[in-house]
Length: 444
Ligand code: NDP
Ligand code: 2IT
Image 1: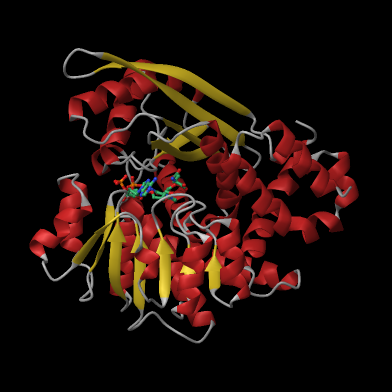
Image 2: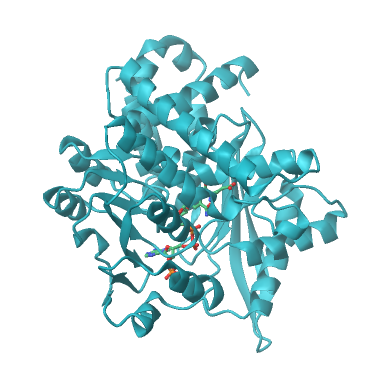
């Protein structure tokens, strides 16, 4: 049995109950085969694949908190510190009822390769809890966040592990986390990113993932002699990534016609009114269905369905496994030219294969959504030098980073004879840098 196949078979046995983790590993291992085969002896001798697929540690803890009625609750918290070969652990905190060890591990694993692609010195991690912030008061969210940090503070630090936002964790939650960390440790340091501007946050971090996604879409289209001007763009999600993806897509001349949340989706043939979506989601924390109250000409449909809308560019920006085989077939039939992932692993392996085989350009999340964590690393730099850069300076750096990522994944795919296969390009390029550091550090 080949080295790669043996490692994957062992993981399948060991982690049979972790489907998302196995899915993420399978996608990476399948596509890095040519790079592994070139160095098989040294990698196998050093157990590189076994070591890169096993997190350094998984911390899990109890989070007791009290609601507004005086009732106590218990949630579970996690931090998966996956790999710190190229820098301190770095990655977001997800607050969503679906959070479990499989989802934490898949996200931590993806983060290792993504962070490597940014070219900045950050290792990979992820954390979260099965706590659902939806429908909770600010005080309840604060109580939860303080309890979460009362455990997590032991394992993080500006040079150790630097958490940030993800699904369910935005500026409000980061503020509560930071306040509690500072209170317990008595240290004022850049231990989290996505912070508010008054206490060490970076301009453009809020916009970075969505803007970065569109910078890579722009590079991709330009490289294929096209632009976003006049293109129809379909977006899923209505959170941090989706909103700023829609904003930059519109600035680049595209027309965004859909957005969604977990209850349903809106289609506005005139182009989404983004100021209204921001008001609904960022201010009122309400449902996307509210949109049609102000825009009766738009259509709201319950459930999923954005991929059925004809488009040139599709940007999944909500969650994992939200773009399925049947969705890919519809996108292809409707003439979609490009799918770029704003979310982490939103496209299933089967759907990805259909898109690639049908000639749809496909850029995976670990390259396409790396602008968020890249700008988090820029926030860390600003915190270290105790300075703040202007919006333009951060945005320009972000733009440069995304251009470089595109160049890197595109040329790596070419180098291995798989031109246009950005999944292979991203996985191999991300992998090679981390492995180089792992080999330099010896077996550890
Ligand atoms: P938010 O919490 O701001 O928004 C998430 C959006 O996706 C909401 O509209 C939410 O709807 C929807 N959603 C979440 N879970 C589901 C689900 N199970 N089914 C259907 N819809 C769902 O999160 P972000 O925008 O920050 O994150 C979106 C994706 O982007 C995630 O995959 C995240 O890991 C990834 N990402 C985020 C980065 C960041 O900087 N924030 C960086 C890189 C990747 P509802 O409100 O109804 O739950
Ligand atoms: O998935 C991701 O890259 C994020 N949620 C952002 C992580 C970060 O540290 O900014």
